[in-house]
Length: 286
Image (cartoon, rainbow, N blue to C red; front, side):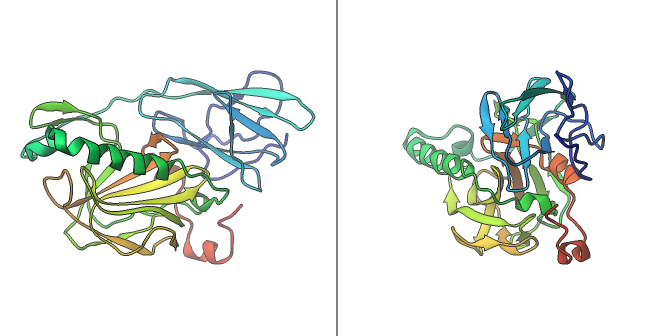
């Protein structure tokens, strides 16, 4: 297995458990909870994580995501066409998360009435189906741009209290911006969900960036793309709103690897957008 170096990979700490060359060694950034690991191997090989095969691009790239509370000791394996299997260990750094207390939320969004539960379940079903899409496209390799201009007002992983009641942690980055501010595609991809009004998230878009990596954009006032559209990095896809469970206008941007919720700040740091001249030269696809 040849060693491949990628400038924005987050694979520090990857070590084989048996003597063999790992598919990727790049001591650029320590892995932690909420991060996205990028590797590359011979595309004829099979990559397994938790006993399940991981998709590879035609060039052999693969990604593995780690959630907010992922166990710190992780491993994956690579099996060659000859049947040789090598296991690699990954050690994640633990994180501490903030506590965020939000007041002034409408009570129907803190404790939804029973007549709204079917709607909420249907919203969750649609979101789950959209996030389960996996394609061999690898738009995420072009890196990620900040999707809206504005200060960060909410961070990934924080434990939230609405009107004093504990609720699920926050899994995105919140950017304060006025209603109508343009929301840009942080990376290219295909729109797999475009809903004008979900119960909690209001106007909602999900864009598939390939290999199970996808972005969600919540609380939108206007969608400027529709399901099935292919978007390019930097393209306007929506406008900021104050829809759903909010106390003011903002964008909630989330990144997932399938059902695994990642930290967009870590993903942007590990996968910075390439300069325009590099993209034009075609270097966005190593």
